[in-house]
Image (tube, rainbow, N blue to C red; front, side, top):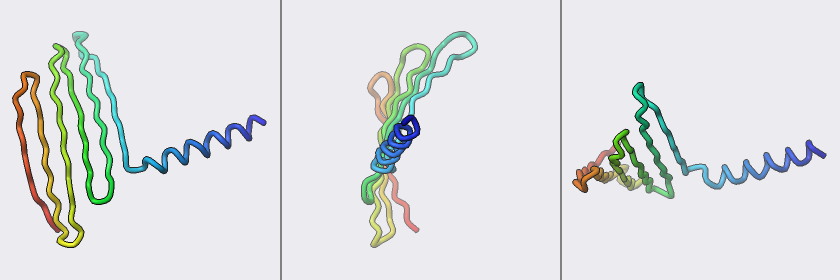
Amino acid sequence: MKSLILAASIGMLSLATAADANAWTRNSSTTGPYGGVVHSSGSGGCRGYTCSSSGSYTNAYGKTVTRSSQTVCDPATQTCNRSATVTGPYGGQVRRNSTFSR
């Protein structure tokens, strides 16, 4: 009976993983040598020819920087356009756009 439950659980986990094969998440916390803690997290995924991601980083003083980006590719021209925005802890933003091709 335990083997059957384990096999069913693994099967359901495999189906859930296959459905979200292009999605990812990440979370991390690190403690520095003087006890300060740094947190970071991110997530993203792809659908069709578009991939996007976002994340944040919080330093030991509680200041947070966020990032978001999107890449859209055109298979006909083999060209991809990427746009990214980083927002600092006081609201300032840096935006970057780039194009790359094969």
